[in-house]
Image 1 (cartoon, rainbow, N blue to C red):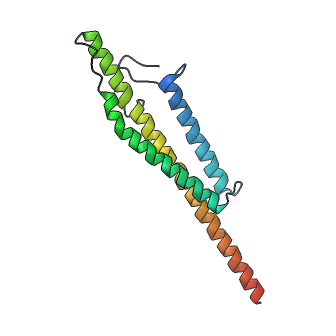
Image 2 (cartoon, rainbow, N blue to C red):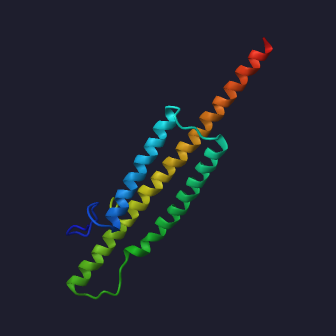
Image 3 (cartoon, rainbow, N blue to C red):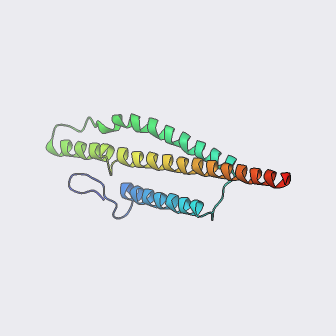
Length: 145
């Protein structure tokens, strides 16, 4: 839904609001996975976690490039000089560039979330590798006795 200034809100039917709601759900899922990993209820093979981290980092990099290109979307031309055309162009610009609810804002939030997921998987891989090393070391000490 858009307000009088063209800003998109997370209410109703679809569009940007639907995307914002889905992004909120993605953030909640990331936090749930992080909590399960921290509590030891979810484990990843270290190499699989590293691969997942790399995939999220690559997706974030592609998204960053896309966000840089969005500047072209913020300039609407050819609608005319009438007041209604100028107002419509302003709404399109707002939908493209608004830092919280526009395309740039939503893409930035998604990029941040992709980075968060990559960091989570990288940390999980490091923790499991460290755990494996400590178990291996403990077994070696036990064999030496």
